[in-house]
Amino acid sequence: MDRSLRWKTIALTALTVLSLGSLLPSTNLALPGWYTSLFDKQVQLGLDLEGGLHIVYGVALDKVVDDKAIQIKQDIEQRLAELKIAGKVETPRSPLGAAFLVVEQAADLAKVKDIFAEYEKDGVVVAVASCGRDPKLSLCKRVSTDFADGIKESALAQAIKTIKDRVDRYGIAEATVIKKGDAIIVELPGLDAVRIERLKGVINRTAELEFKMVVDGKDDKPGYMQKLLSKVQDDERAAELGITGQTDVWDHEDGGQFSSVYLTASDREESVTPDEAKTHGCLSGEKTSDGKIRCKLTGRVRMQTWLDEVGGGDETLKVPDDWEMGYQELDPNEVGKDQMAAAGRTWRSYLLERAAGLKGTEISSADVTWNPTTNRPEVLVTFDRRGGRQFDKLTGDHIGDKMAIVLDDRVTSAPVIQGRISGGRSTITMGTSDPAETQRASQDLVNVLRTGALPAPLQKESESQVGALLGDDAIASAKLSMALGALFVILIMLYFYKFSGVIANFAMVLNVLFQLAILVGLDATLTLPGIAGVVLTIGMAVDSNIIIYERIREELRAGKSVRGAVDAGFSRAFWTVFDAHVTNFVAGFVLLEYGTGPIRGFAVMLLIGVVCNLFTSTWASRLMFDHYLARRAPTTPLSI
Image (tube, rainbow, N blue to C red; front, side, top):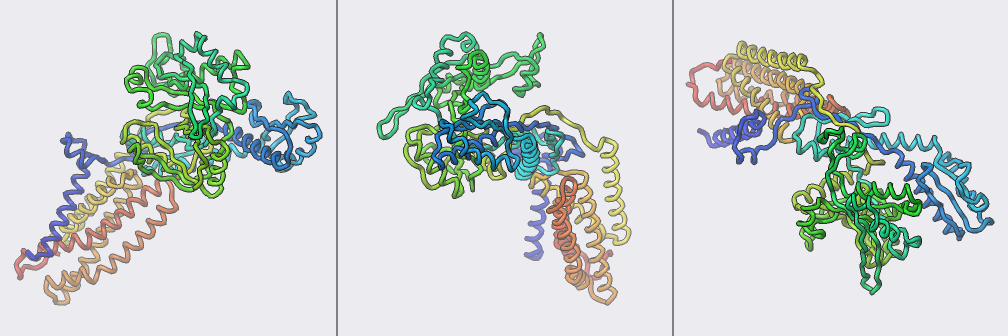
């Protein structure tokens, strides 16, 4: 056998074996562990063929309005500082979107009316009849209803786009993301449970990154945390919920000492009402005889519940409007692994300034890096020019204080600012102790930061499994039509081209085999439009072989030898076949670029099929002809 023919045969055999090996897990056969460690992917069927997961998310749109009020507060306070006017802006939680300006001198009120006038002119704010402040020293405004509705609608549209980007970045084809009222419906094709859970975490992550200052003892003028500490030590309800109070003391490098009071609580399972279970996202939990549902409530939920209860009964124990309570899940190494194993995950509280000193919208890039000191991955974020200046000023103004890095309403860390930080960079440590899980969490965070933050948090309202959208009859009809089409193509090729038709049919089988193997390798999803793309490429394969075979027949009629006719047929027909495939590839690329949903599924299989078909109809078919000619007698006519 010719050396080049031998190497080509080895290459084709290796590709065929590799493709068969990658598709074997999709047959659901019992395979050994070493095999599944090499080939662990399966053909993923789309919603139309197999069904999948149907999730309804609600969007906390009120937070968008509250964020706008805080933005107005920061802007006006900056203008007050420029005008050297003593005053402050309050943003109470009720009414929603309120911004109350209070000055110390009545003479200054006229000077600041122009500031709010700009917002009123643009329809951003409207006046509030009464806000409980001295009318001679205050201006009472709130975000207007029309403007609030506008930013809610914009936030909903942005949320849908962001979710689509995250699903696409994760590599899930044929997922459905649509708006229904104020809710977002996400339908995911039938993936395995592990991938579904990870993808739900990626979708649900708000990716809202904020840098907020921790309120320590020197800033807590009303002594709010000390009152909480006294209350929690004697309160039976706090003891029932497992909440304790502690004091955190830290030193600055220059010798200053700082302190703050915080609460701690651990996760615990208990029975709750169905309404509470819906709030906590555990409606699917085990039901008890009294109609309640077993839920694992986090320490964070326990602390927040207690704060709501005591704040409702005693106004002095309610969190002040300018502050908020943040929560951090503690590292097992800090708490003690034995203690955490016995009590569950432990959480601690931080009293934070409600207004963020810096937000993730100022981030220009995010990457996973490896910390050589802790030997664990971290996320390195780089701010843009404006964000870098803000971060420099924020750290310079609060040397010795703690700055909480808040991601998705959870404190990831609260380092002490030892000095001004220039350069516009910061790192985010992940809260998991398992290195592999930390690596995955870091990469997921980078992906969502790159696609952008959701404008408001998502709340899962319901989750259910859905069956195939097409129904069993439609799927059976589609399978039958595909099988009949392939069978007719095989019979026609055998009838017209005899043994050469066998080669064409074998090349067509390789074509489909390679397409499905590439589909598995890309983690793409096979849908009914995708199957249509496969059927189309089968037709293209037949068309390519007919062009080549008819050319070979012409060369034989012209008196050439069998070897010469085959060589001329493949070489002279190649560019005709190539041009046709290029045309189809361009069409498929346009569909992939501008199409959505089923169109993209069709385009993916069309592009894969064009490449595979060009390979099998020209290179693989030619290799099989070379083997056939090498073994036939010189006087034997070609069966074509």
